[in-house]
Length: 492
Ligand code: NAD
Image 1: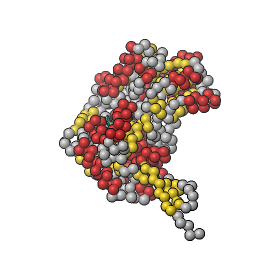
Image 2: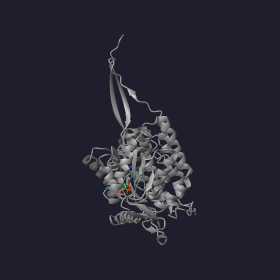
Image 3: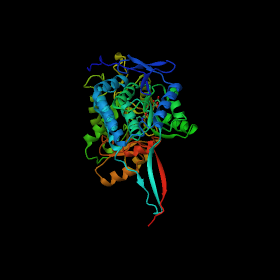
Image 4: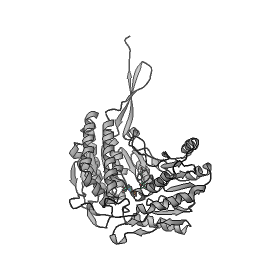
């Protein structure tokens, strides 16, 4: 078991470089899903706190203490920020595990490392991206330049608190913006610590502010704020739709949304490596307790190999038994809180009552721990009409469907309001390309589900959202494009 006795939590907001309580003094309990204990009190931010944070961010932007820095200098500070995360990796990983329940070994190896890598990558990129000169007639020069949008509001969910924050703050800060981040009320602690580490790295006060609080109380004032130029949101499709409405109701701020998913994973009978396909199908749905937006939660297996596939899959299920996430050997930890636990159990009950066949799991686990644990769950005999095939569960629940031909499975896979990711397993190059092209998803995997890199865009088609995180494309969200015409009266 990892030692947590040295951890000291501070739940106050970070505004203008200072740790501050909510203006009205309100707090809420930060409860660990590991064992139900209260970790600390967190500032319950509201309109007045968001106003103060936005004012600090605006002042920092206008006096150019960050936006006016040469890109090479911003780069150096961003790299120091990434180094600060790595220097505090154990503390951050433990905090993340206690706050949202993921296994500490993944919090350390995945969450902290990916967040630091993302911040370093955008820092390194910012002095290597050039602007443009348009190919106009030689009576004029047309410069096409990128400028930071100004004050960026960021709202993130709880499933990968540091990574989701990093995907947005890194390109926004690297481009020269000031930021107000509202983390999820279910996992606020690492974001607050990141703001302190950013200050230690040399990001000036006021440039990166964090206001914790509930969505309607702190998130909505940020999305509705008249002095916020851009709102970048990751979370549910339900709230994402409200974010676009709030942007329109206020100052038409740029609104970018990374939302839910119900990703199809299609395995044809000519799959080149069935064992690998089984491992990916099982491992990807149970990773992070199934609380991943891109989890392949709809598994389509060609009918002729379905029994063989499921036999192999069931043999792997015991490897994913939930356990205390502070144990270094644990691969499946706790569900983030009681509300989400009840949500997952409600979907499991719906799967049973709508006629799906429960092959594994379907129950809570470790009930005496005081924490929130669910067994890895597999349903067979699922049809596209069932709720567990249509709605995002966001828990360790796999829905298995079968098919007989490519056209049918593409139609069924695309029969979803979501379009975040998809996968196809086949040895046939034509089938791989044809199906990948026909799938309506932001990312399609062929014969794997693990590849991920900061260099590629991440985001969805349809109601999985608007815009892309990661890669150089993310700069598009946090910069305005300006054209400057210069007349040239040539003397020659
Ligand atoms: P959520 O929508 O409930 O909350 C997300 C954030 O929005 C939280 O910070 C919350 O406090 C805030 N919020 C809630 N109501 C609000 C309101 N009225 N106004 C402003 N802000 C409000 O989502 P969640 O349960 O935290 O996260 C799970 C969801 O996130 C899933 O649907 C998942 O698919 C999605 N997600 C998507 C991606 C992606 O990149 N596409 C990545 C991770 C998670």
